[in-house]
Length: 130
Length: 152
Image (cartoon, rainbow over all chains, first blue to last red):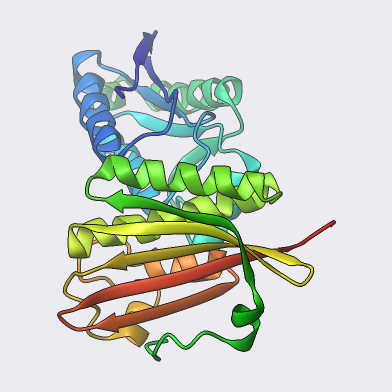
C-alpha cells in the first residue's frame, strides 16, 4: 500500500496508515527523496503511529530516509513510535542512532521549526544547499 | 544451537491448545501476514500487547530470513499449554542452503546478505526459547517460543 505524502509549507509529511511490506517501505524511501527535491522541502516527517511492529528492515529504511534526505538538505524526524514498538526495537538491538525522533506530529513539527530556523539563522548561503 | 532438535521433557508434557497455523513464505507480503497472524494468535492466547508486539517482531525477522536466504519456506504457529504456562510456538522451516556457521549467525552484526545481521540474535532476545537446526544444503528450522503464566 502506497504511503500518502502531504506537502505542508516547507515540510513533507508521510503518514503511514497500515502495515507495510518491504517493497512498500522501499517505495516510500524513493518517493520521499525524490519529493524533497521537487518541492524543495527543508523537513520530512514520517509518522509511524499506525505501525504495530518495526523490524530491522523498517528501521534500516527509516534510517536511510533520514540520511538521504539530509544529503539533499532536509531534516527528517520520525514521530509516533508506540511504547510496545519501542520496547521490541530495543530488545532487537535497533536504535535509530543518528535519526531524530519526536513523540507525535505536533512535537515533530515543533522540532523541525527549530531545526530549519537554525539553518536560516546561519545565513542565506546555507539555504541554497540541497 | 545446532544440536539436533531433541525436545526437552517439559515440551513432551506440553499439550497443543491451538492447531498449527501454516503460512507459506514466498514473498514480502507473506512476512506481514505471518507476523499479523502471530500477533492475533498471541492475543487470543492472552498475551499482553507488549508481548504480542515482541512475538510479531521476532516472526518478522525470521520470516524475512527465509526470503533472503532460502527464497521460500513456511512458518507454523501454534499455542501450547504446559502446567500453568501457555506458550506461542513459532516454527520457521525452509529447504534453503542452510546456515554454514550457526554460532556465528547468532552473533549480532554478522550477516551474509548485507542486512543488519540482527535477525537471528534479535529474535532470540525477543523470545524465551530459541533453537536453530540447520543442515548445509538441506535447510534450516528455527523453533522459538514465548511463555506466559496463565491467570496472570
